[in-house]
Length: 219
Image 1 (cartoon, rainbow, N blue to C red):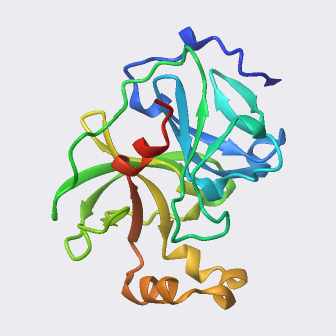
Image 2: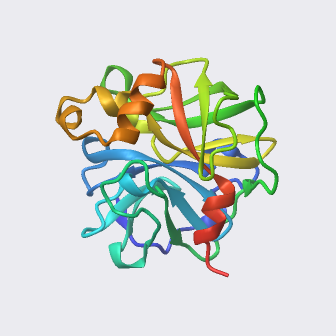
Protein backbone atom coordinates (compact mmCIF):
# COMPACT_ATOMS: atom_id res chain seq x y z
CA UNK A 1 0.00 0.00 0.00
CA UNK A 2 1.34 3.46 -0.89
CA UNK A 3 1.10 5.91 1.97
CA UNK A 4 2.50 9.24 3.14
CA UNK A 5 5.10 9.97 5.85
CA UNK A 6 2.31 9.48 8.44
CA UNK A 7 3.51 6.01 9.49
CA UNK A 8 2.73 4.13 12.68
CA UNK A 9 6.27 4.28 14.05
CA UNK A 10 5.19 2.18 17.05
CA UNK A 11 5.18 -0.84 14.71
CA UNK A 12 8.94 -0.47 14.28
CA UNK A 13 11.29 -1.80 16.93
CA UNK A 14 13.73 0.91 18.05
CA UNK A 15 16.12 -1.80 19.25
CA UNK A 16 16.28 -3.83 16.04
CA UNK A 17 19.05 -2.58 13.75
CA UNK A 18 17.74 -4.63 10.82
CA UNK A 19 14.44 -2.71 10.94
CA UNK A 20 16.40 0.55 10.77
CA UNK A 21 17.88 -0.39 7.37
CA UNK A 22 15.22 0.01 4.68
CA UNK A 23 15.11 -0.19 0.87
CA UNK A 24 14.56 2.85 -1.33
CA UNK A 25 12.34 2.69 -4.43
CA UNK A 26 12.10 5.14 -7.33
CA UNK A 27 8.32 4.74 -7.63
CA UNK A 28 5.33 2.89 -6.21
CA UNK A 29 6.10 -0.33 -8.10
CA UNK A 30 8.09 -1.57 -5.11
CA UNK A 31 10.72 -4.23 -5.91
CA UNK A 32 10.64 -3.42 -9.61
CA UNK A 33 11.88 0.11 -8.95
CA UNK A 34 14.37 -0.68 -6.17
CA UNK A 35 17.19 1.90 -6.15
CA UNK A 36 19.26 1.25 -3.03
CA UNK A 37 19.35 1.18 0.76
CA UNK A 38 18.88 3.70 3.56
CA UNK A 39 18.97 3.78 7.34
CA UNK A 40 17.15 5.50 10.17
CA UNK A 41 18.74 7.68 12.81
CA UNK A 42 16.25 9.34 15.15
CA UNK A 43 14.03 11.69 13.13
CA UNK A 44 16.04 11.26 9.90
CA UNK A 45 16.34 8.84 7.00
CA UNK A 46 19.84 8.80 5.45
CA UNK A 47 21.03 7.35 2.14
CA UNK A 48 23.62 7.93 -0.60
CA UNK A 49 22.83 10.91 -2.80
CA UNK A 50 23.16 8.94 -6.04
CA UNK A 51 20.38 6.55 -4.95
CA UNK A 52 17.84 9.32 -5.48
CA UNK A 53 16.31 10.99 -8.48
CA UNK A 54 16.11 14.49 -7.04
CA UNK A 55 13.37 15.65 -9.40
CA UNK A 56 10.88 12.97 -8.36
CA UNK A 57 9.39 11.49 -5.21
CA UNK A 58 10.91 8.31 -3.80
CA UNK A 59 9.47 5.57 -1.60
CA UNK A 60 10.73 3.54 1.35
CA UNK A 61 9.33 0.39 2.95
CA UNK A 62 8.45 1.12 6.58
CA UNK A 63 6.10 -0.70 8.91
CA UNK A 64 4.72 -2.87 6.11
CA UNK A 65 3.91 0.18 3.95
CA UNK A 66 5.45 1.90 0.96
CA UNK A 67 5.89 5.46 2.18
CA UNK A 68 6.17 8.34 -0.28
CA UNK A 69 8.96 10.86 0.40
CA UNK A 70 8.57 14.20 -1.35
CA UNK A 71 11.62 15.07 -3.45
CA UNK A 72 11.67 18.70 -2.31
CA UNK A 73 12.22 17.75 1.36
CA UNK A 74 15.52 15.91 0.82
CA UNK A 75 18.64 17.59 2.19
CA UNK A 76 21.10 16.74 -0.57
CA UNK A 77 24.84 16.74 -0.08
CA UNK A 78 26.08 15.36 -3.38
CA UNK A 79 27.94 17.97 -5.43
CA UNK A 80 27.51 17.63 -8.34
CA UNK A 81 24.71 15.07 -8.55
CA UNK A 82 26.58 12.72 -10.93
CA UNK A 83 30.00 12.91 -9.26
CA UNK A 84 30.67 9.65 -7.42
CA UNK A 85 33.79 11.18 -5.83
CA UNK A 86 31.80 14.08 -4.36
CA UNK A 87 29.95 14.25 -1.07
CA UNK A 88 27.47 11.46 -1.70
CA UNK A 89 24.76 11.76 0.94
CA UNK A 90 21.08 12.71 1.22
CA UNK A 91 19.00 13.16 4.38
CA UNK A 92 15.23 13.22 4.85
CA UNK A 93 13.60 14.66 8.01
CA UNK A 94 10.98 12.31 9.49
CA UNK A 95 9.71 13.44 12.86
CA UNK A 96 8.84 10.76 15.42
CA UNK A 97 10.81 7.86 13.95
CA UNK A 98 13.03 5.97 16.40
CA UNK A 99 16.13 3.83 15.92
CA UNK A 100 18.92 2.29 17.95
CA UNK A 101 21.45 3.65 15.44
CA UNK A 102 23.43 6.85 15.95
CA UNK A 103 26.36 8.53 14.21
CA UNK A 104 29.72 7.57 15.69
CA UNK A 105 31.73 10.43 17.17
CA UNK A 106 35.08 8.65 16.72
CA UNK A 107 36.84 7.77 13.47
CA UNK A 108 37.72 4.31 12.20
CA UNK A 109 41.24 2.89 12.43
CA UNK A 110 43.01 0.49 10.05
CA UNK A 111 42.08 -3.19 10.42
CA UNK A 112 39.02 -2.40 12.52
CA UNK A 113 36.18 -4.91 12.02
CA UNK A 114 32.71 -3.50 11.39
CA UNK A 115 29.33 -4.73 10.12
CA UNK A 116 27.46 -3.74 6.97
CA UNK A 117 23.72 -4.31 6.41
CA UNK A 118 22.03 -3.49 3.12
CA UNK A 119 19.52 -4.67 0.55
CA UNK A 120 20.46 -6.99 -2.31
CA UNK A 121 18.53 -8.81 -5.01
CA UNK A 122 19.99 -12.28 -5.54
CA UNK A 123 17.91 -14.45 -7.85
CA UNK A 124 15.44 -11.58 -8.41
CA UNK A 125 14.29 -11.55 -4.78
CA UNK A 126 14.88 -8.47 -2.63
CA UNK A 127 16.60 -9.53 0.61
CA UNK A 128 18.39 -7.83 3.46
CA UNK A 129 22.00 -9.00 3.76
CA UNK A 130 24.43 -8.54 6.66
CA UNK A 131 28.14 -9.27 6.47
CA UNK A 132 31.35 -8.26 8.21
CA UNK A 133 33.93 -5.89 6.79
CA UNK A 134 37.46 -4.76 7.56
CA UNK A 135 38.73 -1.19 7.39
CA UNK A 136 41.66 -0.96 4.96
CA UNK A 137 44.59 1.10 6.14
CA UNK A 138 46.08 2.73 3.06
CA UNK A 139 43.59 5.60 2.82
CA UNK A 140 42.00 5.67 6.25
CA UNK A 141 43.02 9.32 6.68
CA UNK A 142 41.13 10.50 3.56
CA UNK A 143 39.05 13.57 4.39
CA UNK A 144 35.61 12.23 3.48
CA UNK A 145 35.94 8.51 2.67
CA UNK A 146 37.54 5.32 3.90
CA UNK A 147 37.78 1.95 2.21
CA UNK A 148 36.56 -1.44 3.45
CA UNK A 149 36.92 -5.05 2.34
CA UNK A 150 33.75 -7.11 2.81
CA UNK A 151 33.57 -10.79 3.72
CA UNK A 152 30.78 -11.29 1.18
CA UNK A 153 30.37 -9.48 -2.09
CA UNK A 154 28.21 -6.35 -1.86
CA UNK A 155 26.71 -5.07 -5.11
CA UNK A 156 25.58 -1.59 -6.13
CA UNK A 157 22.03 -2.03 -4.75
CA UNK A 158 23.38 -1.66 -1.21
CA UNK A 159 24.37 1.97 -1.83
CA UNK A 160 23.32 4.10 1.12
CA UNK A 161 23.42 1.34 3.74
CA UNK A 162 25.21 1.80 7.11
CA UNK A 163 28.61 0.50 8.20
CA UNK A 164 28.41 0.16 11.98
CA UNK A 165 29.37 -1.52 15.24
CA UNK A 166 27.38 -1.67 18.49
CA UNK A 167 24.74 0.64 17.04
CA UNK A 168 27.28 3.33 16.09
CA UNK A 169 27.33 4.19 12.37
CA UNK A 170 30.79 5.00 11.00
CA UNK A 171 29.67 5.76 7.47
CA UNK A 172 27.40 4.87 4.56
CA UNK A 173 28.23 2.78 1.53
CA UNK A 174 28.93 5.17 -1.35
CA UNK A 175 30.61 3.11 -4.04
CA UNK A 176 31.89 -0.36 -4.87
CA UNK A 177 33.84 -1.79 -7.77
CA UNK A 178 30.53 -2.76 -9.39
CA UNK A 179 30.02 0.95 -10.10
CA UNK A 180 32.87 0.80 -12.59
CA UNK A 181 31.86 -2.53 -14.14
CA UNK A 182 28.50 -1.23 -15.40
CA UNK A 183 28.85 -0.73 -19.20
CA UNK A 184 27.11 2.66 -19.17
CA UNK A 185 29.68 4.03 -16.73
CA UNK A 186 32.93 2.79 -18.21
CA UNK A 187 33.23 5.68 -20.65
CA UNK A 188 32.78 8.44 -18.06
CA UNK A 189 35.56 7.87 -15.53
CA UNK A 190 37.31 10.89 -14.05
CA UNK A 191 41.04 10.52 -13.20
CA UNK A 192 40.13 9.93 -9.54
CA UNK A 193 37.57 7.29 -10.52
CA UNK A 194 40.13 5.55 -12.73
CA UNK A 195 42.56 5.45 -9.80
CA UNK A 196 39.85 4.04 -7.52
CA UNK A 197 38.95 1.34 -10.05
CA UNK A 198 42.60 0.36 -10.39
CA UNK A 199 43.04 0.15 -6.61
CA UNK A 200 39.85 -1.73 -5.84
CA UNK A 201 39.53 -5.47 -5.58
CA UNK A 202 36.17 -7.12 -6.16
CA UNK A 203 35.03 -7.05 -2.52
CA UNK A 204 36.15 -3.54 -1.65
CA UNK A 205 33.91 -0.49 -1.21
CA UNK A 206 34.22 3.22 -0.47
CA UNK A 207 32.44 4.52 2.64
CA UNK A 208 31.35 8.12 3.22
CA UNK A 209 32.35 9.04 6.77
CA UNK A 210 29.83 9.75 9.52
CA UNK A 211 31.76 12.87 10.49
CA UNK A 212 30.91 14.23 7.04
CA UNK A 213 27.30 13.02 7.21
CA UNK A 214 27.03 15.09 10.38
CA UNK A 215 28.02 18.21 8.40
CA UNK A 216 24.75 17.98 6.46
CA UNK A 217 22.51 17.24 9.42
CA UNK A 218 20.33 20.20 10.44
CA UNK A 219 21.56 21.93 13.58
